[in-house]
Amino acid sequence: MIRIFIILVFVLKASIAGAGEPVLLPDVSPNTTAEFGWATILGKQLNEGLTEKGYIVLNSAAVRPVVGSQIDACFEERTCPYGSLQHLPARVAVVVRVLRDVERMLVQVAVYDKSAMQPVDLHELVVSGTDDPVVLETVLQMVGDLIQEMEAPPDNLATDAQAILDRKVLLSEPAKSAPEEGPPETAVSEVESAAQQAPAGNTEAATSAQSGPAPDKTLRGGYKPRHLAGVKKRFEASELDSMIWMRRRSPHGGRLLIEIRGGLGIGDVDRHADVHVTFGNEEIVNWYQEGPSRSERVRGALYIGYAPTAAFDVGVLVGLQYGFKTLVSGWTDASTGEDRFGQDVAQAVQVYIQPRVRFYLIWAGMVKPYVGAGFETRMFDALKIADSDIVDYPDPTGGVFFGPMGTVGVMIDPGPVVGFFIEGAYTHHIGIRASFAETDRNSRPDIPLETPRYDGFTVGVMAGAQFRL
Image (cartoon, rainbow, N blue to C red):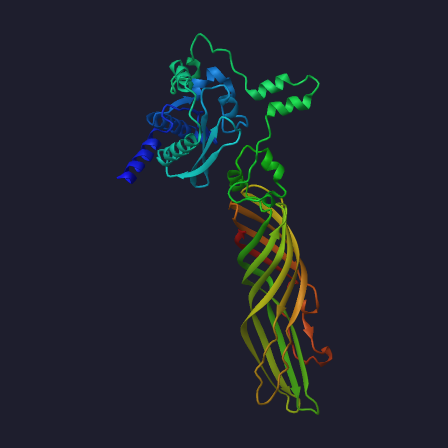
């Protein structure tokens, strides 16, 4: 029975917490004009919902005669709602913005108390439609939690707030329907007052006063100072909370990068070998030539790197280039003049390694074009030839060839920890095995052998996903 009584007390306390508490509710801000209608509808829903719960709602139309235009576009203004709260009988403010992010509808809710310029709580909600009840439920919860942490309000707080409402214009009426007797003495925010009181010669002090105290740009949501490397000034100049700013701008600084890649290699991705043995004289002459062959084959890769700043990252890419090996083998019996040739094709995989650096042309934002450079080392294995009872063929050896490479691409970042990209890469091949090599040209058989076409380069077209830790 005692437990039930305690529970009922807490439920009753929660239900009446904030009853009669004034709440400043500026007009909901649309991110673009496309969300204007939605913002208007949501503003009415919040106004009615807070009123039904017993709060005294001071909307923009009601307080504009008191605080002037500083209440307008509150979500974007640095000193709003702090400046307005200093001149209103309210301790709590709810600031809301609506926007569309790709395919989603988002509502950003910030709750303020009178003593701070930064919100005490901030939520970003994904909603199913303009009438999704989760927004009102979240606002009521945030306001209720904040008020419960506050001391009891002054006795005249609700009375003074109601006095403003008694002479307010209706929410649905245009601002021009404000009382004809004119607004009372327009309050000037503390920020503006400080600017006016600054000495005439102290321009820096006046400017500082106008902009207000530097906001406490606290990093929330697990973000660290290293994540702002290269973009710290942009973040500090923004009006957004760190969680919202990071989600929108998605800088890469201070992140370990892992990329899974797939695509197509165009150019020297196959290998070709001609092998010939001459016997029937006093000695056996072995000869082969081996080199690249042009084709278009699939490839895949894994990239691991680190971004010390949002401007660039460095790492190593390890990839597999799928391809084919073509073998043309034959022998000639010098004593009889008999010869025989055949051709075989087998699948093969080449391994390539690319240390690389990538520079982003745009450091913060959803779309980040980039360029990069590196050096590729590609390895291929030896060619194993099945010998016959008549002849023992020489096996062309495996090898390595190299080349500088450059990339150009674009990264699409829907969020701070994952991105999707497409890029093109060009690698110029150098080294002995980058072209056809022979064992001994003087031993070349007197038979027509055409060297296959090869380009001396490979173009890679790749796409994939980047994960940032």
